[in-house]
Image (cartoon, rainbow, N blue to C red):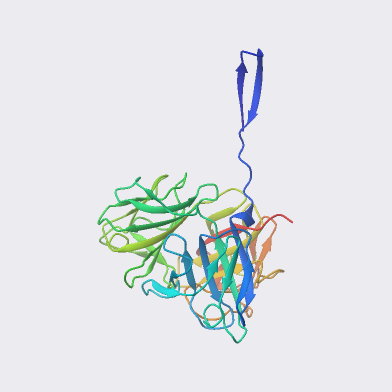
Length: 352
């Protein structure tokens, strides 16, 4: 947009363009592939605050690290999307050196000596966490306002407590995990889950309703909030909050079309898409443009399972397009059951 002002000194009008610079996707999200077998240093396009790592060739759990809890040596902390287990503390997983990461050999889940392939998805938040007092509970927040992503750590404050998220808009997707005890991965999605409804990242469960208590307060431009069920208000938690950003990210939903193809417009070419049927018990699915450099994007990883990469044998296919993604006519009910609702989160690739 533009704003005009009158300069009395020069006696003339000036016009100033205040349109923000467009987001450069690879400066905020990217994917890297590597093969285990020896200690290695991998170049990244930026220093990440959130790393999601998975072995493609072995049945090892998804490992999620972030800079708010501690992402580097001597200790790092991770949670696994395929299990309800509490946070795990480990040592010597890897070392971040600005825009590179050094991974020692030895752990099959992160760098197998047998040469297993791996994928690492990584996001930029806001660097070192800062205290946020926007809610009734003080949270520790690393927020990338321009990219619509923040990492929020907090200790639950009981029923109807709120926690600041540091973004400029209300999050459309919030993924919450209790870290000090075993508990499911609670997922809120705008316009899909009501205050008394949830999905679980570690489960195939469809949107489930709590008949007696609320789970959430609807996110605002400053806070996320807990309800009265205790699910996200008792204990220590990590939350990942996202909202859509034009040209970079999209959180939304679509309705399955059955045997016909189904095009979902995002406004950019996706580099990463995660899909889950919200109206029935189905797996979560992730495709990306590094494991799938050409269509169809049929190399799948499943966040709720530790299983190795699945090559989509005839029933799960998507094409990554210049302006979105298409669930092809070859896809099955897992991603395109007629009349059923699916949620998705997508991030852009740099223009080519």
